Image (cartoon, rainbow, N blue to C red; front, side, top):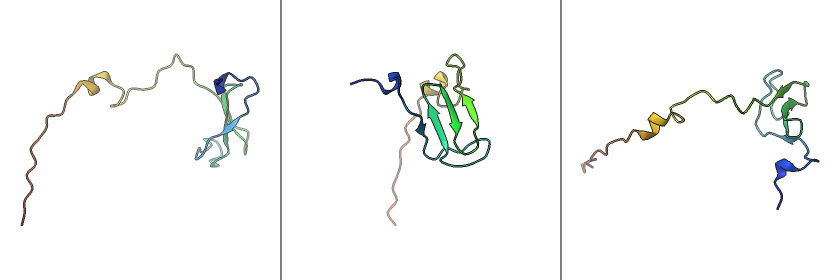
Length: 81
């Protein structure tokens, strides 16, 4: 079984639900793994893949300190009325 990212004849793939940042057309964006870019087939917008060395901005999910915090369990009382 070969990795699809390593195939030299890999075709561009459409990204379902993606919206072009330039013309705002939906479902017209393709990812080209060979050229390492995304582009819009409607307006011709092209954007190179971000450099892997640039990290994503920190979020509450990616911060290591947020993952270490344990939430203390609380007792729940059910009332029958």
